[in-house]
Length: 479
Image (cartoon, rainbow, N blue to C red):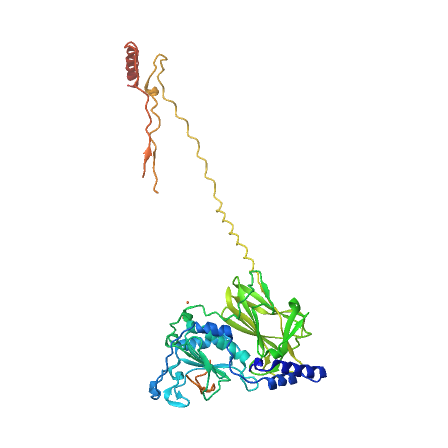
């Protein structure tokens, strides 16, 4: 339902009159808004309409109803992937149905697209029996804005339709079917989307961020406040109250807690992390405004989701939800919900303020193990020193004739022998009931030569005679 459909001056005058009289309770405020709000269909925003006019998706009907033999065996792979993703991206969805082999309600000659496995019914909680546009519109608008990328050929929601094959400027129109579709969106995917052949199925499938996220969590941690564009509150704005001068950063919002299976008001902090790692997640609370003892949070991190219950009235400041491993980038978030599974006492409020991520320093590496001491060799007995051998008696040497310049012990020194070096070098109306069974959810060698001394030259034959004489003398003695 749309407050925009109500005469705002009348609403304000009535509201002020009752407020000044001091006789309006919160429940009466809600009833007054409901009484003055005229129910209306899905109101597509102008910016979404403009984006939708740039999208084109060909329409493929289910064909004629020929009985169960004409139905697909089951829901298509593309519809399953889209269903699972929507349930994570939009937690306000209570359930999603899919396959149903049947004819269109009201036209037994045509098969329902549910029979082809290409249709989904996305259930949204109602508000006082009417469509909750705060919850459902965000889903429908997102699907319009990404129709061509995903392959969305048709949408029905709250008595209105959008069809991707219509001409720009006339893609949406009033729905006149038997069911008003006030409690669910009926969407149909194209044949290509059913087979996962559209660009969306090969992309990252990021969780939608509404208006972008202006806060990136640095590797050393950071805060996402309720004033950031990374924060979004869902549900009826009537039941979210803004408080200035309180909470982290000087503002917070709060709503009432109540007993129900699904949330009515809830909030999300989108996370954009510069670096992957383990972070402690903490939430800011103020017991003057948040007093519910079983406030439910969920943390989506690195593909896993954990649910934590916190007593918001137990302390003031930061309360730790836990320590979680996050991936770098977007697609992760923290949610807080207003519903509880058990009875809730009167005046139980929940606060949505700020969240803080604190990185956990990696543990210091263990000290390097010292190598074991080398084993000492066993003691050995010293070898006995050999007894000195007696020095041999020197051979008698011939007396040298100082006049002989050369002899057997005076051959010319030719140097050492040469040294050699080397080396190697992934058009329907009546919805199928969610209780149906179909609902649910890794070598150069180098060298040199020594140069011998040059030949011995004599100046005359006279010195030869003494040499010959000496040789003759030696030869005679060795005999």
